[in-house]
Structure formats: C-alpha cells, structure tokens
Length: 486
Image 1 (tube, rainbow, N blue to C red):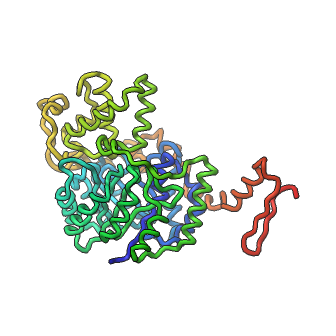
Image 2: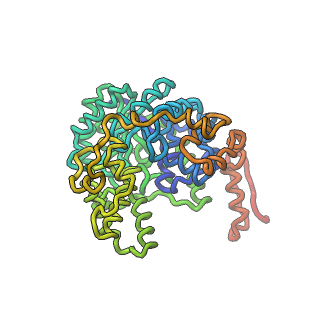
Image 3: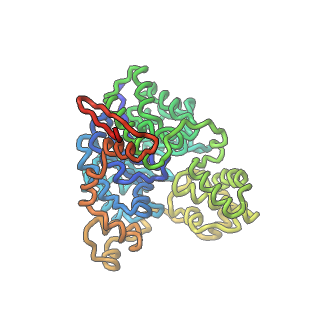
C-alpha cells in the first residue's frame, strides 16, 4: 500500500472539541517550531470556529496567528479550513470576498486550504477552489458525512465527481459527529476511491460515538492515504483519535509512516502541561451512545442545549427536543448536523416543543434555507413545512453566490479607509465593535510570544508555587537544577 500520512488537528479541531476553542497564541507559540520535528504531513491551524473565537472572545488577530505559525513551522505545510462560500462564519459571502480571503490566507504563509459546504452543495466551493488554485495553494475538497436515506454511497460518489471536476488535489471524508462505523467505512471508502482514482483520500472522524479509532484501523486496511489525528492529551472524547494510537495500528499493519516518536512524545508532554496549567480537560475515550445515530447532535451542542433549557425552566424537555430534531431534519430534506444547520435545526425543534405546535414560528434562517439561499437540500422538503416556511414564494434558482453583489467596493466606500488587508477582511466579516479590539494584536506582539514561556520555566514556577513541595532536584542531561529551601 501507499505510505500513510498524519494530519495534525491539535491546534484547530482538537481544542475546538475539548477546550471550547480557547487555545491562545501564547499557549501554542512555544511549541510551534518543535511541531516541525514530528513528521506530520500537514498541520491544521485555523478553521471557522477558531477564526471566529479568536475575534469574538480571545481578541486575537487570526491573521497574525497564521503569520506567527508560518514563521515557526517552516517545513510542515499549514492548513486552513473554510466553510466554502461562508468562509469562517454562518453567512454566505460574495465571490470577491471569498477570493480576497483565500489570497490573504496564502499571503500569510499558509500552504494548503481545505474547503467544504455544510450541505455538500459543491456550487458553494467553486469560488474558493478556484481562488486557492490561483494563489498556489494545495486544495482538499471535503465531503461532509451524515446518515439519512439519501446519504448513501452513490450520493458521496456523485459529490466526489463534482469536487474532482473542480481539480482538487485531495478528497476528504469529514465526519463531524462521529457517525461512521467500521461496517459503514468498508463500503464508503471503496466507493469514493473508485471515483477518485489517483486522487488521495483523507479521513477526518470525531470520537463522539467511541468508534472512530476502530474506523481509522479499518481505513488503513482500505488504503486511505491521510488520517486526521490529535496528540494524545487533546484526543478522544469529542475530539479525534490519538496520533499515538494510529501509529501503533499502522505499524501492526505494516503501513509505512514517517513519524518521530520521541518528538511526538515531547509534544504530548507539552500540551498535557498546558492543560494542567490552564485547568483544561484532557480527552477521554467516549462511551458508545446509540441515540447519537438518531438525533446526530454533537455532544458539545447537547450540553449547551441542556444548559439553555434549564435556564428557561425546561430542563425536563431535552429528550423531547432531541426527538423533534430528528423529525425536523427529515422535514427539511436531511440537512447535515454541522454548523450552521445543526444550530438552525435545534432552534426550530426547541420552538416546536415549547410552543406545542410544529412550525408555528419559523426563524428567518430556516426560511432562507427553505428558499434555497444556502444551497440545495439533499432530499425534497415536506410540503407542510414549506407551506409554513415560505408559503407561495418561489425557491431561488442557480448558485447561491450568484445572487450576491460584490461587497468589497461598497465596504471600502462605507467603512474605509483600511490600514491593510487584515483590517479590510475582518471588516467584511464583522462589525467595527468586534474588529477594533482585535487589531491591537499586531505582528510584533505575535513575534514576542516565543519568549513568554517555556516548559522549564513553567515547571520551575509550578514547583515554587506548590505549598506541599519543599525541595525538588531536576536533572536533564548533564545539568541539574535545585528548587526549594535546601
């Protein structure tokens, strides 16, 4: 078989899944250069939620994060994920904003782009693929996996053909809710590979059902070329399988895999320490939950929903809402439970349960979906839903972005001038109240992060702060360090 490669998601999807996307520049900066030593094929850095949280909550400029990482991770290509025409947010943007965004991603030192559409409507990735090719980026086109009567092998073969027609360099099966099983992967991967030919195949699956490690083992036997993994402290649970486990399974199967195990062990130690220092959880294997295959709501969204229902005095309605999510999804033509449609469907299901009447209130986002503004549904929508949602209005025809006027000239006229492309593009996605605080994080600040901390300094500070440790002696190589009163 062909060599197996690992794509590391520690800096993106892993902390998104386990730490509510709260890994800061200062947490990752000291170890970025060392990541180059591990032997990953690609390192994921930024995606939709990471970009959005950087702006909204961390007040860090995500463009600075890209440049900072590119200066330190020199050999291993950095990868950025975008949601096709939606980029890093939930709304669809005109083609000129998409093209400018992808060009700026490349200018920040990123070398690979992964693009997908939450509905698998490949018309919504045409612009980003073309822009990435023009900018000299490698491109992966992702197929979002889900379960429904229409999302069968033939469906994914058809979507694969559409991506291949756009000349993507790799295909990726993206399983955000961890729904794949060992049995299912045995038919899905061969079906996609028959269409893909020589185009390599990636697999990205979360551990929410507890089955992803077994799915990865099967995928190795089926000749998948790239597996998305996280370093062990940030693996499992709602995250992805651990790189250490995948390496062990690959070696058992005689799959060629070039990874520096010592460097990976050091990386695991560093992020385990960061988790301890910051009070963040480490990943634990998830228990198999058969109900996941009915409602398909990721675990993090369930916990958020439960909190919101309790706050509204409706804590006993969770199971009823989850059952209604499955019914709403069927009525809407089986949209995939991934952002933004997971949030849309949960909102609609909650309204249906709380109001005691289905579709008495239909949110604007659901109406836009029903009208086709987000793209094509995978299956026909229920007539009773359409009557409530759009009445006699006609659904839009053609590619959704064709209905959007260019935005950058108007943006410059109404909100300019802009200092640089960082400022321009942030303004394209967000209002000024969010953009202004982020722009104080400049490249000079990002450069200085390499001096903020080190594992040895962190250990010394931990020992001196610990009231139950009076003396410690550390030895590394020929060097000894004593800490304490004796």
